[in-house]
Amino acid sequence: MRMYSAAVAACGVVALSALAVPAAHADDRFGDTDITSVVVNSGNPVVLGNTERTVTVEVTATDPAGLTEVDATLYRGSYSNPDASVSSTAACGPTPDASTTCTLTFNLKPGTTPADSSLAGTWHVSAYAISADIDAVFLSDAADFSVQRDTQVSVNAPERVKWGKNLTVTGGVQNADWATGTYAAAAAGQPVKLQFRAKGCATYTTVKTVDTAADGTVSATVRALVDGDYRWSYAGTAGTAAAVSKGDFVDVR
Image 1 (tube, rainbow, N blue to C red):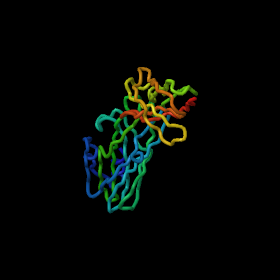
Image 2 (image 1 turned 60 degrees about the vertical axis):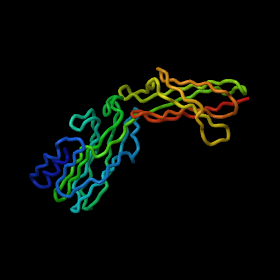
Image 3 (image 1 turned 90 degrees about the horizontal axis):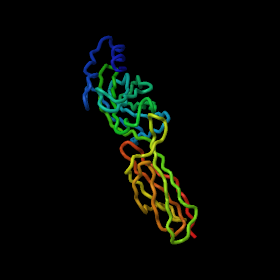
Image 4 (image 1 turned 120 degrees about the horizontal axis):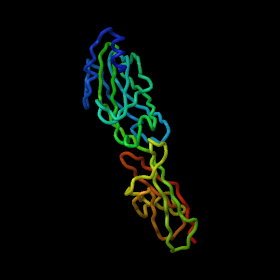
């Protein structure tokens, strides 16, 4: 753990064992060092496909004496027994400033960290800061954030249809499968909205909502009245990202 090694190097022998004791929402500190803010991915969910992605975490720490080191770890599950964890590429510091915002980077690798799709959902950040006068703070759950599997949505509508006739729009929803490095059908029963934008209009309107089938496909039948684009819109879940298909234009004659 970088905190322990940095403290020993700075003062010879310092007992920081209390800072390493895992506990939910622990707030362990010596002196006036503080962590005032932790922001992951600018406050947005982390959407991960099947390729490595870099995620940034901004940790703001304060101490009148300046800061020697600031660092954090991302983990899934409990701090004492995580399902997965990712360390930063490098800690911040030292700095003489009484307040600093440290931008840490983390490399998330599908198939390794996270290892499989079950690790989507809520993740946590543990963070620590050490001051120049060897004060310190450690938070085992400094912030929570969402890691979601990337989503792809397809659409297919007929090129042209006679006015007043029924037309069927199909499509499908697939989510990244981190274990296999492919995209797999979304779970059955996921609501997906069929949306329409009339030619010359700027916005889409929902015309029907249907659920995904067992193979992730969707289908809906509507009446053809005017030219326009159809698309499918998927709202996402706790572990899968929201996504919208491209528009598919239908010429009504």
